[in-house]
Length: 202
Image (tube, rainbow, N blue to C red; front, side, top):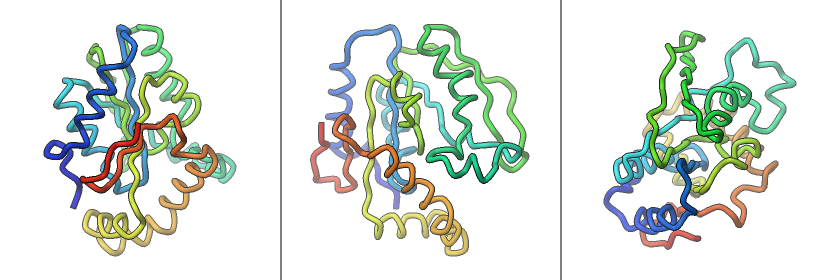
C-alpha cells in the first residue's frame, strides 16, 4: 500500500522547510527516491497543500531511438535530460514561460505542447530528478527512502509478479547505479522516511 502523506505528520516539516526558503519569484522542489517509495504520492500531497504544479520525470523517459548501450551505461542515462533541460529547467530558471511535451512510452511519441502554470512553487517528481544539471537549479531536494522488503511488497501490489521481475532485472539496478554514482541521498537532501513515526531529517 502506498503511503498517505496527506494524513501523516511527515508533510508538516516539509511545508515548513519550503516556507523557510529564500524568497524568489519561482521555487523548484525536487522529489527523488527508489521506485515504490511514494514520490508521486508525496508530490500530490504537496501539490494540494501548496497549489503547486507537478512535472513528472516519467514524461521525460528516453525515446527508443536514443536507447543505445552507451547511453544506458551512463548513470541516469535512461531519461531525456537534454530535452528536460531545454524545455523546462533552463526557461524555468530564467523566469521564462515553460512549455513542454510528455513522452508517451507506448506510442513512442510526444504529446501536444503543455504550458506549465506559472506558480510560486513547482514540483519536479520522479527518479533521476537529482541529476547534477537539474539539481543545481533546485531550491529544495527531497529524498524518500524505503527498505528493500517494503519496496518489493509495494511493487508487487502495484505491477504484479510478472512485471516485478522486470523491475528487479532492469529498473531497480539502473536506479541503484544512479544513487551510487551521485552518492544519494547526501547531506543536502531532506530525507523523508518510510516510517510514519520517524522524523523527517533536515
